[in-house]
Image: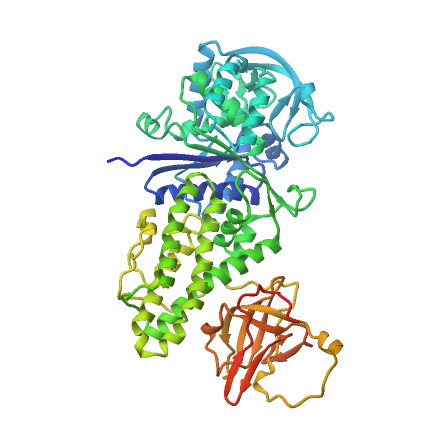
Length: 636
């Protein structure tokens, strides 16, 4: 049986300069959808590319004393470098300078001209070079381009025009009969209102520059950029050169575009297809803008973010995760370095990375690295298993509805619940009692199996990370062959699997602008009798609840542990003299009480500020905890 097909495209990006983080955002969305569809068993065709013609490119090349092709070749090479580093899994990269595309554009132009839908006329209008768009006087905003706000110039020339107005009513009927064609709904409503205001015929050729595809029957003219660029989607699908491929993949399932070009993709492009007698795409999805610290990116403002630099500093999967998790598709999203670091530390290092590290540490320490057959299931196990299976089912529904942000949240709720499962089952305590060996095997298996499922579900978002989890779990099967069904079935991890030694997949990132907070713990010292104090003196101590996020031994110090704790509004690293009483994995997840305003001190070279509280009697020591209180809660 043939697989169901799925065709998704990004816009083809304009190579006037290197791509910024907004372009990376759009392409990462498309890649996540394409990877999910492959995981779900679809035969996917994923297209991206570059839109290389037009007056703006010609002027840029002239300024650099090179040909337009030399100019775009250099810029397009940076596009491809970015997609490689970001692990974009496109099946085709189309350039409008490709010979295959020239042939399609000229064939389409000729066909529509021959049937009377393209005609020659003189034209005068206000032209925005950066947007490659003509505007009427009434469309200008304060005399400037309504899209980008830049100055426009009055141009007059002989041009060919496409009879857009002829198809206005037919397009409006199609949109109203197919409510999912333009998404989200807010974009759909905008387009309906735009069409109802009246469509004008479209200028589709230029004579004032020659960097473009020549009109086949009048070589003084070059085909105007939008008529040229939009047809890339059928060129790559094989419209002229591979009829079998075209029949297989067209119509496209989703054209993913920025909201500023929804109008071209949902009005001009469908009308071109109507004139050709070709079926329309199933959906045009307009995503929001990515702004920086609440402001649109602009060279003049100096806030353009280079994704290549971010990838070099933080890693591709961290950037991919942030973009997909932080922003709800269809809405504008905000990028900030602080938010990125917080996401990496909280979600990736603390939640996912810590779960993997704790699980593998315990399997290696308590079980010689082997995952054994689980035993009897208790209520707490059933709750985790049910949640894992429910998460996989809900994830599929959310992804099918393009709710990527919601799907990620579902997976992270499972990760959070699994971290809590460790605290509830206490594997370190089970390991101390030989009579509870079978119970220990069940708990360790459930942890590893949940991580197997998580690795599959996050693979569309974090394609570098999932195989690393697979490898550390010791699974020998090829991760590239896993399916969504593998992630929806509990029990896929073979008993007898030997795990690897844990290696951090997301090390914590310390904010260079702030000192790493740490604390000296005085609990290893005896506490002498002290004089009475007043309530005012007691009030000077800031006691708060802190959640232990990570714990490890301090090198060359038998009594000391280095704890990373969450105070609700900040995270700190504190040194505590409790290594003789607690194993590191016993502490993670516990809510302890600490003094947060202790004078800074240095222990083994670690600058510290604060102290965790413990009760001691003879050789016994127990931390003061507040299990049901949120991090940051004040202790009075």
